[in-house]
Length: 172
Length: 100
Image (cartoon, rainbow over all chains, first blue to last red; front, side):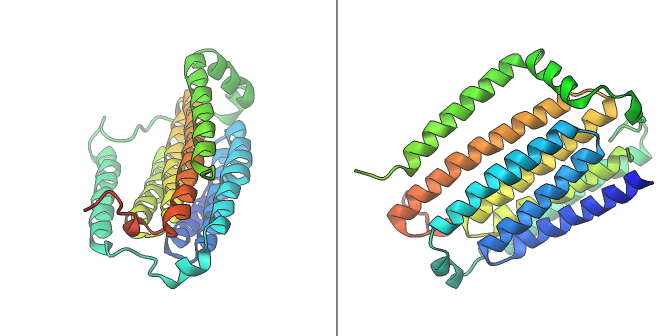
């Protein structure tokens, strides 16, 4: 019961702040609503018993990436940008793409009820008490099966760091 | 946990909101933020299936996606700063140097 209430609170918060993020004119407001959406997603992760990802989401996404975004919004001149039209004239393209995506997702959800063996799986999740300690299990998997991918990700971060420095450097 | 359909629906809704943001907004920073929302929607799917099957591999991949999102944000915002310094704009449809 508590699981259900928590899920609906966090899901409603995530969708509402996502919609507000896309529709606000001011980029700073968009950033604040994106922070709310990311925090609500962190709550969903906690509700799914992924404690490690919950902490990573808050520290890295909300604490790191969003601060970077807000810094850049302050660096580029916002007052000029606010005077201009904020929405491109692509409303019909957006509508068509959104309808096509909704139809696809709806078909998938519908087919899993109508056709056995199709769509989403209906098996029950293991009870929360039987799960291993989350951080420990993630670490075992990350440094065991996925060690190569982990190393590649660290190289990617190094490249991104050098790239960001080169891009943002002032021309001499 | 609730039936997996709930999580898939939430993830699909966030994904569609993000796609609408990418298509309709003119400000490049907001477009990048919409992409973060899309990546986040994918993470919900991965973690929900990881919980359903009792296998942490999905959470490991969600971690990789978060690392990718950080790299993408750093490079993308670096490009935006460099571009703003040259052209004094952050609007996507005014970035037409390669168009003639």
